[in-house]
Amino acid sequence: MGEDPLVQAAYRLCRRTTRAHDPAVHALVQLMPAALRPACWALWAAANTLDDLADRPGVEPARRAADVAAWTKALEHDLSVGTSTDPVRHALVDAAARWRLDLSGLRGAMATTRDDAHGLRFTDWAQWRAWCNREVVPWVDQVRQLFDQAGAPMTLRLDRQADYRHFVDGAQLTDLLTDLGTDLAQGHLLLPRDAMEPFPGAEEDLIRGRWSPAVAALVADLTALARRWLTRPALTRGMHPGPATVLDTAAVLMRLQLDAIDAAGPTLLARPPRPSVVARARVLLPARLRSALVWGLSPLTAPGVRLPAAVKASEPGPAADDTALRPPPPHRDGARPPRIATDKMPNHVAVIMDGNGRWAQQLGLPRQEGHRAGAAAAHDVVYGALEIGLRHLTLYAFSTENWKRDTDEVVTIFEAVRRELDEGPLHDLDVRQRWSGRPDRLPQDLVDAIRREEHRTRDRTGLTLTICLDYGGRDEIARTAAALAQAARDGDVDPDLIGPDDFARHLPHPDMPDVDLLWRTGDEQRTSNFLPWHAAYAELYFTPDHWPDVDRRDLWRAITEYGRRQRRYGAAPSLPPTAAAVRDRRADCR
Ligand code: IPE
Ligand code: IPE
Ligand code: MG
Image (cartoon, rainbow, N blue to C red):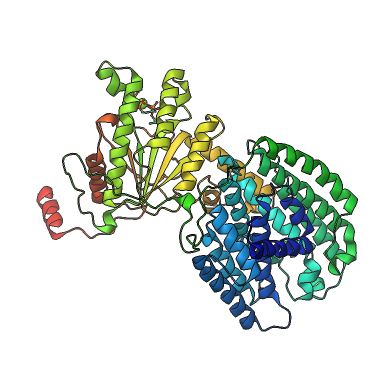
């Protein structure tokens, strides 16, 4: 905590607010190292202040919304000057500067809280979850950022994102059930209609504050659902033990809370149920011992320089390190990209970079040399993608089938990727890097470096470059099917209604657009398990050159060729034949 007595008083106030309003959260914060706790209290107190402003009973909704907006605006101002007259904002401003937190991610959440002042109803879980993602998740993400900044990253394995989302949903549902009575007293019923429908009369009973068999059955159903969402045994596997202890303990505490909700009966509508002190102590005492041990073994690395007023809510945080973005270096012969009409420009080009081995063998070199030369070709193609203004480029670097190769060759490929991540020339370009594939068989340090680069480049807007590593299309489809099956089991999707959009939403990268152009070098005409879902309607383009012989001009040629294709998606050709074509056809018939 800072030496400034005003800051200390501000943090103390935030701590008292957290303890009084949510003892479980307070207990979880106590499992963190002392240096991190004040920032958590500040975040929690800020979220709570905004909720209170949005929910004040007896105040007009417009007035409440205006107060939330004014608080948010004042925070922006306070962040720009590095201090505040309001104690909660003062603590938050100090925490942001001390830990270099990028608070811009909270803007959406604050705007949602402002809009909530006008009342909320949800039709289904999807709507409820979208609200939760907008309003709650950004606050949780601040805590993740805090752990990152402290050198104890809450890194999730790439294939655990869905677990994390369910976990957050489970926590949110537990909170909602805990506060059911308080919310109802204020006229809020935040359960989706779809969830209440199977229990006829429950919605009306709840609105009237009446405990009935239908309400009891609904609550039992929802506590069971929250338990399923919270039970994610693999969530913290491989994670830094500090944040892992916090998350694991949170799960146990929330299950205790759900037990208390189940046991509350009609009193659930009168006051928030709490687990017994003894039950909580049984969970918290060993957790405190464990966290003291793990934090003792892996101390924090606080960010060195303090940035007093520099951390503004309107600027990306330093983790997103975009201070010195540079343009791509020009082509060695000065070649410039062709002008492509907007409607002829693909949005997403995916490349099977094939022929490294044969290129090396032709020169009498070991295959490994081909992979090294291939990296240079990939750089040039990325430069070309930036120059021509391509939005998405996806490169196939290692397939799930490539494990069949010699260990030496596999190691060379991974080393090349590792070098790329640590010191590659793409570092300072306007490229958002992402990775697709199985994380569980790759070396852990490679996965860590991948996550680091994804995080560092996350706010870049130029080109999204996805590298497919230990990627297999069938593996992706199988994992997506598993996620969908889990979602069906959790009641998130109805198996009878599953369509392509539901499938797409459960892909590991649901926001990856369809591939417009799939280009393979190396004189082979097959797709080798690459992006079968996304490339279902891609234009295919095969070229004879080995990948190390390729440069950005080949990408431009590929894009130019794409512009000549007519994409019909199953429709009949739309253009009427030209007069000349009709004349030619007549001449042919004679
Ligand atoms: C593509 O080149 C790169 C990877 C598969 C990693 P290859 O290594 O497949 O080269 P060829 O096809 O054997 O020439
Ligand atoms: C596809 O190339 C995989 C990558 C380019 C990473 P391969 O060389 O492995 O494909 P096949 O074996 O020719 O189908
Ligand atoms: Mg090959």
